[in-house]
Length: 576
Image (cartoon, rainbow, N blue to C red; front, side, top):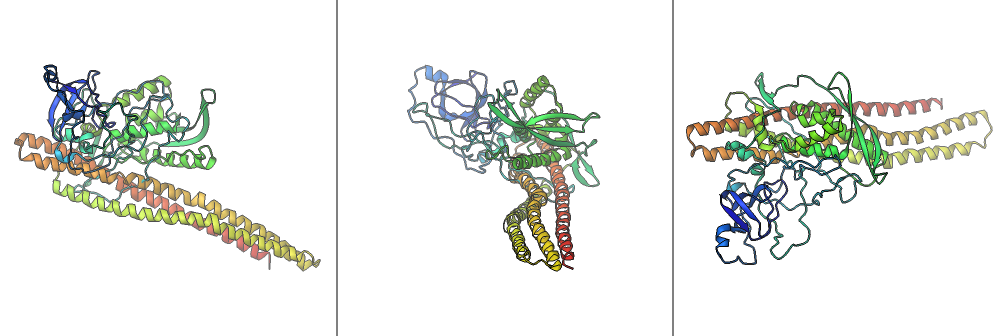
């Protein structure tokens, strides 16, 4: 075994396939001369990962009296950047109060990365997660994690169509490490491997996925009346997020909101209690495993007013939308980690299921081994065209949703502000008018005074109705737009990874034997089938979601104005 000695410190980026090394570490080399100036090796603790080749020297040569390296470290590997985002969650293994140390995530070997697949990934904007027990119990400023706004895809697809997916950039990037440990410490941005490599998709494409456990979760893509789609759900079920409740621990030192989840998965309704951080952890697991499925966004996590009724209610509604989308997805609804999340009531089983999910080897590119697809080969050019059409459709829809969101927000502000105030000011004017007639003691004046008093009261009430309309009727539309946008926001990066896979095949085809090329083509087709199936699902979801959301909104609009008209009609009758 070839061994090397680290001459400089190198800090790995979380879940990038890299490994941190410190000057003086001795590593066993697994692969050398990886494109871009990297090596893969194992340290004394058994951890495996990638590190810069220029940061180490042969261990034997060093012991034989080789000259010490210069104090300034050599330049880091430089390769033309491609994408600065990553959909690989940067922390699949949380240390929390679930009572067990998180399992180490299965390492995804970055097999033979090409020089074109090394984008520059920016250093993180969030603090690294420490090994504390309650990383989000108090939802403090330090623990706050904000999710990017969302959206959702569009387009119908047939056998010729294909997929795209997206920026799983709900990657929690970590900030740079703290104080320097010495002059050899490197504090620079460096070029990292692309999502295509880090996610394990390249390893899958070239047939180098490394797994040691049997497949326990299988999914299927079928062709139904010429449409490529996921195998339909055999048993639909629902989940209800309800009863948000403030709870505490450590004798009240830590407090949090817990939500009950009731599922109809079994004959006997099962109810579990989950906190926001549990949803957050689940989101990480789903994002890491199902890389060609855009996972809907969770509600943003905020500190201000975290126990205010409106905020808790709003968060509950977003969580309900989230579980609805999971339950309707042919793959996610059957996910082992999801089913464990909504059904496990035993604390011991809960912890063991958490560890099992964190040790899952079939994540990222390796998940494609869990999918059965039709034998019919796909035309790469037709697939490419289908993905391109879907990408254009998503881009157009995303912009349209943004405009709708802005207009709805403006409507909300106007109705809850000036419109409400003007109705109530008019009510005050009617009240003043009523008071001016109270001096007159005639019967006709008393009748008019009563009518004016009632009008003043109703105008004030109508102002309140406009305010309530913004919450009851407009807020659900904004919540659905948030969910849609957050979903389709994932599409560009997933499309990029898929295109890199197709490009990898085109580059390799001429250098492989006919048998090897055929096997690679089968793997590419399996991935393309999965992408097409997901496009079909997202397209159908977008249509149904928008029909339901806008139809409900307009019905409520009509009912709202009819209510106002009815109130005004009743008032006018008092003046007859």
